[in-house]
Amino acid sequence: SYTYGYRRIMPLLEKAGYHMAEATLRRLMNELGVQPAMYNRRKNNHYSSYKGTVGKVADNLLNQTFDATSPFTVLHTDVSQVRLGDSTWAYMSVILDQATKEVLAASVSQSPNKLLIMDTLNQLEDNLPNNFNPIIHSDQGWH
Image (cartoon, rainbow, N blue to C red; front, side, top):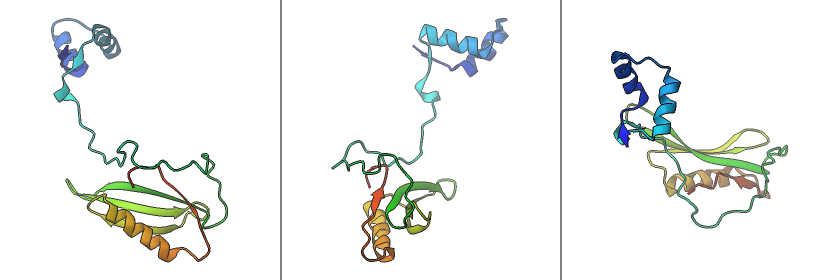
């Protein structure tokens, strides 16, 4: 059954003369299967590029070994969400060199779309020396 959360129930219990620790109230509510109403829960509005398994899953060439010392051999990329104002967001796509920690390409957009990713990859292509074929590591989100 759904009800108020423990923070709203605690003062009501104290007003009725019942005193207990918050942890005790939470344990009792859990044992009774009493949960806060869904409208009391905050929605997580943070950006996530995760869309489930989409397309081909790349082989794990690095095996979580992030110790490259030669430049342009292992690059890392990700998309991050940044708040610019009360309700304005920007999305940054960045590629950096693991060995030097240098940012090789970066793009910013109001939307986390394919154009943002392609712009970042085009910058990388312009900044990457000839005859280098780096491993590009990502969390394999949609991009």
